[in-house]
Amino acid sequence: MISLRYHVISIAAVFLALAVGVVLGSTALSRSLLSGLAGDNEDLAAQVTDLQNDKNAQAARLVGADSFATSVGPLAVQGVLAQRTVVLITTSDARPADRDAVRALIANAGGTVTGELQLTSAFNDPRKADRLKDIVVRLLPAGVQLPAASDPGTLAGGLIGPLVLIGKEDNKPQASSAETTAALAGLTEGGFIKAGQGLQPAQLAVVLTGGAADGDGAGDRAATIARFATQVDRAGAGTVLAGDAGTASGTGAVGVVRADTAATSILSTVDNVQTAAGRVVTVLALHEQLEGGAGRYGDAGNAQGPAPGAPQQ
Image (cartoon, helix red, strand yellow):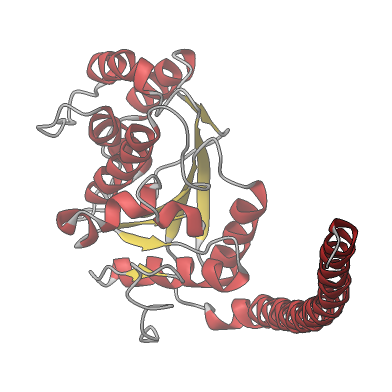
C-alpha cells in the first residue's frame, strides 16, 4: 500500500523538477535575450555613429560652401548696383553681422548705403499699435498720402517709405529735409525707431529681420513687419525683405509676405541671409527689383529658387 509519505515525496519531487526546469529554462532564455539585446545595441550604436559622421560631413560641406560664397560673393555682385543708392532698415532682432555683411556687398556691387534705420521692439508690439498709428498720422508730411489701410505696418510704411526713399519716377526726395527730420524725430521720441546719423533718402531699401516671432501676438508682430516692408517697396524703386530660415514660417515676416500673392508680386524675399550665399542673393534681388522683377529666394519650402537669374550687365 502506498503511504501518505510516498505521495508527499512524489509531489515534492515533481515540484522540484519543475522549479529546476524553470530556472534552467529562464537562464537559457535570459542568455538568449541578453545576447539579442546586445546585438541590437551594437547595431544602434553603429547607426548613431554613421548618422553622426553624416552630420559632420554635411556640416563640413556647408562650411565649405559658405566659405566659397564668401570668397566669390564680391565678384558675383560686382557692378550690379553701380551708382545706385540703398537704405538699410533693420528690425530689433536683426543680426549686426548680417547687416554689416550686406552693407559690404552693396559696396562691392558699386552701390552706396545712404543710411540706416532701426525699428525697435515697440514698432511691432501689438499693444502699442494704436500709439504708432496716431504718431504716423500726426507726423505725415504735407505731400505724402497714407495708404487706405488701418493696420500699423502698412501705415508706418506709408510714412517711413517716402522719408527714406526717393521717388521712383523722378528720383527726387518725397519730403523736405525739415519734414523728414521732424517725422523721424517724432518716431524716435515715441520709441519706435532709431535713425542713424546723416540718413539720406535712397533708391532702394533692404529690410533685415531676424528669426520667427514667438509668444503672444507672434503672428501680429510678423505681419506688421511684412506689411511695413511691402509698403516701403511701393514707395521707391524696390525693396528686399531678408531674414533667416525661421522667418519663412507662418510666424515669420518672410512667411507672411509669401502667403500674400499681392505682396509677393512686388516685394522680393530672402530666407537665408544668415549665410554668405543668402547675402549675395539679397544684393542680386535688389538688382532684380530695379528691373521690375520680384521673387522668393532661399532654402525654405516656400522659396521659388535659390537665387534670381544672372543680372544683365
